[in-house]
Length: 506
Image (cartoon, rainbow, N blue to C red; front, side, top):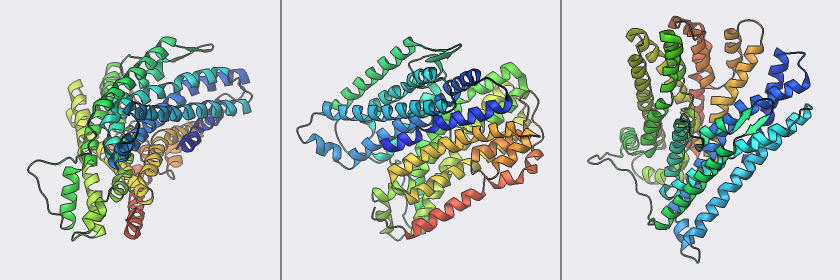
């Protein structure tokens, strides 16, 4: 795992190359010293906070909690503690493991970016200081993971708590508290003529991390080490015969179902401030355009992909598949039942997400007919996007074991939902001719649902200060509409062919 983290920590080197290309395209005669300052500022203000917030923080939260939950589920925790090993020493082992992950990530990020800048002849002192200061946010995420460890009684519950903590951190990041890791990223480093570090923010973050770790240790020492219990629906029973029974059973009793719906609602609250800000500064046209943007659901892939990635592999590893297939069921019933269950969860979650945003837009004063029209159309596009992410998660789950599938899913969520769209948009801005046409052309071969959503959004709302154009503009980009559907079908077809022939004795 440390090797994988070290590899993905090379991302800042790629960000340096993107920035150098972008700035030299716009300013061909820019001096090297000024270019170095612009690249450093962009890395510390945009690239690194996004990289930490949307990839490394969820990786540490989810990987630590899911690994502990897996050990607990298999009885390894009870076995280890039956030997001359105190709970405190066992817990400190997880503290050390988390610190190693944070250290590998921080060093990889600092060194890769510095080497790329040195290759262009840039000064790297400010970058090194700023990147290491920003990396301390990982220590804050570690403290939260250690606080939640006593609650992770299975691999799945570890994933759900990790995702929940990630979404909660994004929500809390909107508050002006520098000890919150996501808010810390915006306040730890100030960029002017040089880079200055807020020692107060660092002190608050580290103090909170130590406090949360101590609380987590005490909770772990006091908790009773019992196995995890499944969530049941009171008064509900179902037959395992056929697809119908599998679908209902997995839908109504699946922790993934409950987790996604809850996280979708939390994610909706992340975007309410955006609607309010646009309405305050740009009136009703800005509010309608903000509604379209927030319906892109930029944070939801970070929830959908990991949940899809544990759908099949988790059921195989814990023996659920073997138990179900010992009854009058076929593999097709289980595969389709799992898929329909997850699609149903995505549909309910998307509906609640849409309802919250539309209701708040109407509350702020958006016109009813136009708001509902935009909400239904772009809500449907969001649903198609999320189903594609879900299908990609199923593909990973069919080919990989649970931990590897989780890791790859988080990396892909970051790339497809954050890094790739930024790179394609930057390239389209530098292209000759219309930005909208260049964006549509450049995005077409890229299987990023969020990127294709942006293209369709831009077709209807190219200028945020003007009322959105007619929705018929979407029909002029049939290729982008098709790219929301075709990869989904391909992913699911490959997943089924793999599962059909898979050895279920993992």
